[in-house]
Length: 459
Ligand SMILES: Cc1ncc(COP(=O)(O)O)c(C=O)c1O
Picture 1 (spheres, rainbow, N blue to C red):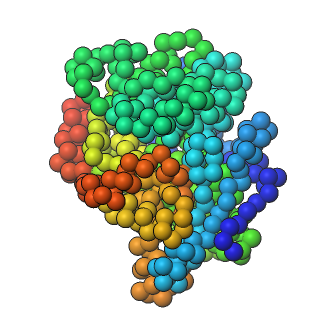
Picture 2: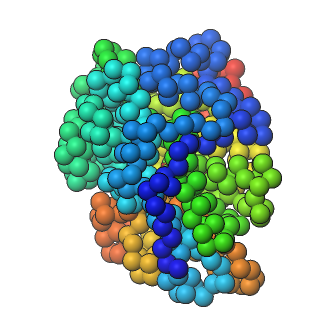
Picture 3: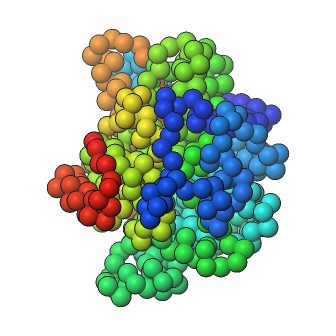
């Protein structure tokens, strides 16, 4: 069977929350001025009430509101494919499945949380949501979610992408959002950065600072985040819950679950429900989890495990995570997405405990894998999930050598229709290989320690 489908009634009715099932309690976000955990009330200026409740909830299952399920039905359940073309080309005994989230209106998994966050904001009487976006995937998902529930949206888009990738901006504007290139003159933090360097190309860290400042300095405006935090990740579990049902239909179960990580939301959405099977003794196999990041932004494979801010201007609380330092500016030659300096605290804890393995690939190998996928499966993957494709191909070739008939499941979390420039650069050999230098990570950690001498920084 090529394509395994579910009916609309099978859109999950609950999200899965990993917090009660973690091997250790998650270290809470802290306020660096007091070193004390941030209280849920302190987050009220930023997020809607229900999102804050979910952020710290110890409930394993959280009901999905009917209105959100209805919005999901526009594109969910998403298809699960068997990668028969790729398997044949590789000559592998492995069975490869991919869950495809590119069928959503913005073309990725991101609206799974965007519609939920827009719904809860609407319930709280919020009029406008602000956010940051890199290449525009998250921004377009939030613009879409806010359109569904009648909210305004303001999006701070990293300037280099704003200039290079006009089509995502147009998509956001089509759904009614206003989009600013970040750093912008709209906020105090943007103006400060532009005064230092008018040519600053921007980064996600800077855009987050601007979106937060805009939200906290205006009435009836809240901020929305597309990854990293617990409530965002749990909204994504519809992906893994559906995939589990779909695999059951073909009487299969994964030995290995693979996904790319930027902040960690798409991969968490896929693997958490299988992790739940594993820790609750329900998994028929000893399923393994593999996260893939770029060598240009190797937060887990080269970063340090410590408390750090989520943004450049240090407006956010500090989160315990693997980080390259909040001053991280990605290499402008990096085409692969996944450019955030930190990762979700939950993924970082599971990595530290050895439950999630992480691997990094450079962009040339990643685009080469994407090219092989296009020519065997036909679907054009986004650069982000192409990292997962590279890892899956390597694993399938390993199976070819050992004869193992592993079942591999990966997340194709978005299509690459807006990423043609990167594919053109790859085809015309203009895409250089890039590795973020170890020395830069050590320097960032030295600066972090200067700011906060009490920090414990470990690998
Ligand atoms: C298609 C796609 N996949 C993955 C990511 C990485 O984010 P996350 O790790 O939260 O899924 C992004 C981020 O914008 C994205 O657009």
